[in-house]
Image 1: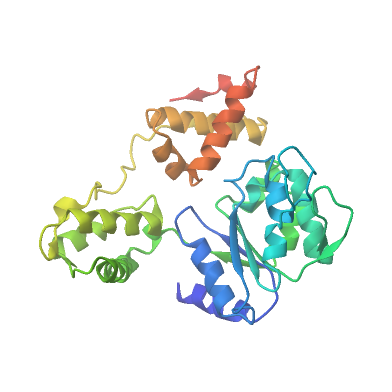
Image 2: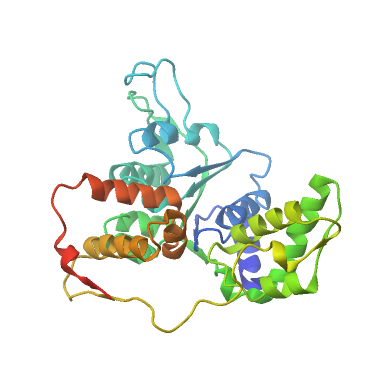
Length: 312
């Protein structure tokens, strides 16, 4: 993490595009906002947009804006994120979930600093620093057709890789103290973690990463009576995931990666008994992304050849 802090400090004072990679819940938006606050743009807007949480039919309008009457329901002119963030920083989270045709337009903005609102032929200029993030492996996103290769090269100027919390468990006590102090200030009552609770937190594998840690502390704070938070209020199994007898998938060589992804998602969903939150956490994607994938699969009239693959 010290290396990451050094990277943040060095890139913040430049105009270089940063590309943040890491599992869901590792703090990618926090890193992006820190870069903004340490930059010369700190007094200008910082806007964040989750590309996986906006309908594909609306995302172009949300990012670039639209003119009145440009489509049904466009009753007035709408300023997009690039226009509203002018002079500041625009954080594009889950950029690999952006439709490919929109990625072309994003690439043009990054290259030329110009764009057009939906329904307009007027070219607008923007002075925005773009910081992008993904919870996918960028190279895999390219190979599966989720990210344009030319856009990857344009975004990946200064990569920052955030490790999952399970790889830095020694940071759990510090993070827990930070979050608990903030909770106590907001709620007006000081509570502390018992040694047993802290020990349990320091051995848990945290599939939801820092976000899960913060939420676990908030629940435990609410449930604890008195000034001490005991381990009974930590609603998770502190045992690390078992390494033996794991389910596995047998994939034949030559199967397209899109079919492998589909088979893996459906197999993981089945493994967790249809529990979508656990499935999304295990796959390292947002719940919205998982819903989008499942909707795509439900809309398909023909099964993938990959459906014949064996899951044991």
